[in-house]
Amino acid sequence: MSAKVIKAWAAKAAKRALALESVSLESLGLRMLRSRSSAADCVSLISPSFRHGRNPVSSTMRYRASRDLSRRFTEVFKIKVLVALVLFAALVTMARASDHFDSPATVANPQADIGDVYAWISPEGRRLNLAMTIQGHTFSDKVQYALHIDSGKVFGHTSASTMIVCRFPAANAVHCKVGDQDSASGDPTDPSGLEGRNHRFRVYAALRDDPFYNNLKGLLGAYAAVSAAIKNGVPVDSAGCQKFNEATAKRILDQMGHTDGGPAQNLLYNWTASAIVISVDLDVVSKGGTLLAVWGTTSIAGKPLDRMGLPFVKDTLLGSSPFSTDDASGVRRKQFNAAQPMSSTGFIADIQKMLALQDALDGKCGNQLLAGPEESPSRYRTLAKLFAEDRLWVDSTSSVCTQFFAVELTNLRGRKEFSHDCGGRSPAYDTANVWRSLLIAGTTTGITDGLHQDEHPPSAAVFPFLAAPDPNGVNH
Image (cartoon, rainbow, N blue to C red; front, side, top):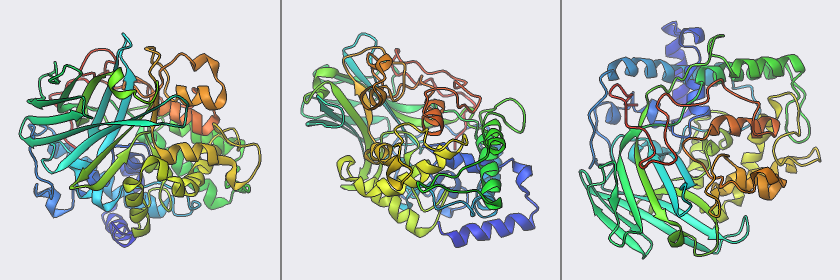
């Protein structure tokens, strides 16, 4: 999707008098904070192939459409139009930071578009629990869905890898392999799961409630305040961090925690996603050591389409500018999706730019997690390297899982209070607010969008972990 197309949308929106306040800036946050929110969410509503159900990737697992689809169609159309307005009316003046809708290949294939990846240790300490949500509401018989579990003895270094690969040859049919240790074939839609032949893992795959939540309108208000301040002139230090004054920083964070000036609301209420859920014996996936690094991929005939481990990397930290839709950004994201974690150093400089913007939002440059003491472009390199690799780190020696980024905080910041936490990402974590706090203030709490749980709370203990889809769930 080119900038020229977005500008055309903006012109049409202006003619229709769809002012920013009439749709409350919803779309901006839809891309800033939703790892699952690829361009397919917006493009599918105007692209003929999506609008009339002609998806280029064939479907093998189908679900009943939402009863309030038409109402949501109208809402998301307004959101889509607002993307254009905000992009060119509010944020075009921002420094060349980074964000994205997604690469063209992923946009064209929502059944290959990874929403989120989750990885954590089971309460009894014997299994690794995994979940990967997919943007499309069906799986494809052409797509290979894979979860990679790298393992090692020292943080940052892995020496072995186990690949869990699932394919969907027909409706309500899956074939999954866990390396050369086990496999399972059959119907994966029973909530109890389909067990492997050697009883080393079980798998579930079907539509579930999406556990992700966000006050997107609040985020939009925060970034509108950022844009207005930058447009009026804000000094920038040599590390690329904008030095907002105290009043501006207060306004940014206040907007982030409210919806239209009132209590925070979840725009993603009742969203649903296709989910692949796996519980696997730890000894099968920890050949290299007890520290695990998890990431997911999708591909077709060996051609990589999407890659994800940590949340928000491509949504907020990669691209030519926030919410950029230019061709160069699309190419860059495609390159990121095709890269392996250990060959992703070429993306560090891109990511550093957006980390500088995140660091600025509380009016204090240099207090971001792992930010260096020197005011230089390399200040954000350590954290940028972690995001470029894009892996969820899990300490498999602990069955206590309460803290997102616990392994990183323990090993890179010496935070001993997290040394007995498995880290990773459980669907029950308040991940979005932890992420904001770490990147804005260098803390694990304190920066919030006013929301702390989904309307349908997931479980970290009871398989298949993600809540059943609501009967009125949104088919986005």
